[in-house]
Length: 231
Image (cartoon, rainbow, N blue to C red):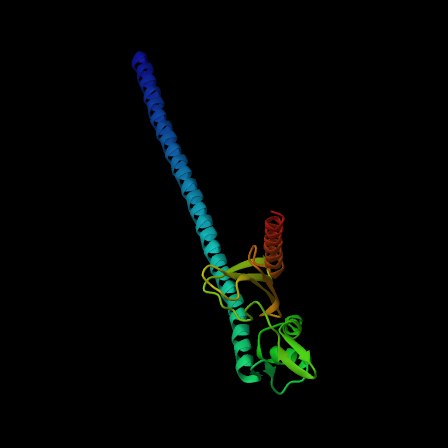
């Protein structure tokens, strides 16, 4: 009897131990599943954050490109509007080469400041470079270049956030106004204004270069004639 009691007690201990092992195994499995779930969740969050960052960067780049493109258009529009104003001035104020109803360059500068998107600096440059005072009369100066924006193709370069350069050239088969044209455009109080104009001759086409070439040809011809006379 005592033996059975001891045996029964032993069996109960063994069963209890087995049951505890199962619970322990189940607990370990549950813990592993939880850790795996947490790990997957963490990876999903990281992937989601990365996708959001990439999407934000792409949106920012597109916004910057659109903004830059819009600014370029505003800058070029300012140059075109100046050109339109210049054509209007030529049609309404110039008869032949004489400026009508104006007696000084200051009046010309004032007209362009009122009627074109230009700075005071460029308005003064227009009045001094494109016109001349001749015997109390204001006349159009003889120029080797165009004073309007005659560009089939042009490029806009950003110098600073508020400063652009619009460039084009007339070359190829063109017979007149050949050269490099550069317009400096600046942002003043939220408005794009043409600030300066610069013209440059194509390589070898500057009048001084052509004069030197003609002189060299004449000198060469004179040398040949002298040589013939000596013979």
